[in-house]
Image (tube, rainbow, N blue to C red):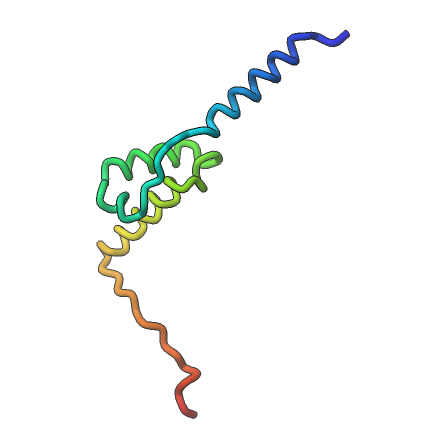
Length: 90
């Protein structure tokens, strides 16, 4: 005999999982996260706490990209022009 509790439990799981899909969180740019350190740190903390669900969301990607860019800027990383060896004569 099947229990009727499985159908409502299943529906509750489906409803709970879909409720997180409709977040109307504005997507911030990398430059915005570079300029807004407290917000960047909050987003990174939230993303690191739940990487399975949030790691590839636009805000997590942009916040992480901004953090990486700031680290490189602090190291005084210089972006170099690529060397084109194919145009040199032999």
